[in-house]
Amino acid sequence: MLRAGLVGLPSSGKTTLFQLLTSVHAAPKAPGKAEAHVGVAKVPDERLDQLTALFQPKKRVPATVEFADVGAARGDSKALYDLAAYRNADALLHVVRAFRDDTVPHPLQSIDLARDARAIEDELILADLGVVERRLERLEKDLKKTPSPDLKKEQEVLLRARETIDAGRAVRTMTLSAEDARRLRGFQLLSGKPLLLVVNVDEREAADAEHAARMPGLLEFQAATGAGIVGVCAKIELEIAQLDPGDARAFMADLGLMHSGLDRVIRAAYDLLGYISFFTVGEDECRAWSIPRDTRAEEAAGAIHSDIQRGFIRAEVVRCDHLLARGSLAACREHGELRLEGKEYPVADGDVVTFRHAT
Image (cartoon, rainbow, N blue to C red; front, side):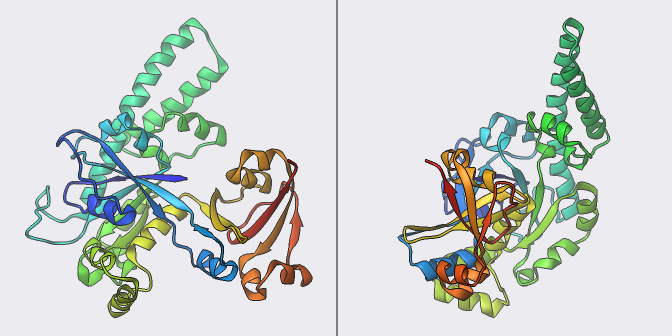
């Protein structure tokens, strides 16, 4: 399961968005105490809906993203290191306030997206500095006692990370070899995680998601930090979430919304991490599975069960659109659209796969 942590200034709509994404409505406990609330959101995928309609299985199982929210105020980013939900997050979503509401004062007294984005970025960088410096101090002592090539390489990449942090840049902006990236990954640095800016816009801007990226200063911030950007109006989304499906679709049509903002946020978080979905289908279950792009078939089998990966023989693969057009796996086989692939095959987004394996 993919994991994402929500961060942001107070009154940005962060907790509201978390509740909308996950349907978890627990209020933060103990004011001033950092405590993560975790919920799961389903990744929207029309292809899974269509496969479910075709096979009429007993269960429909979408891919999921786990979101964590913590009631920490500004200046509390270091506390996130004490929470497993944030240390283990695959990405961070920073909710940035763009809406104006006199009844909900902005903690910094004005709306300034670039300033707010930078403020949280600086906190993440500062929190990472403490982690890096403590490890470098320990490494210096260990290398004096027992010189080691591995420890020396770790020290070198951490010194590069500290140089980046001292320059006010996030660790995610570093160019790293696969080996160095693996070394840093073990420290779970917050500024090293992929970042998605979720711009909480005014109601009048709800239908123009692309407008969020064009707001003053955000394109420059995106270019400097490698962050993604998606716009959403939490106020509108709350109204949509309270409607039955038919009325919700009509309301969205009136607003000019093709997809709900919540679906776009979940999808953007999913895409930010470079993940794709493949499908397994049958009478019992139609399911979407999350894997990194370019995952080999043998490793994709392990997403289902380690026994399937160990006993991998081959993968029977058909494109989802071919299966939906033909109406059955048998028809795809007759038309030569069902292929046999080996363990090195890179599973593609939208593949429908049946794994053959030794028991």
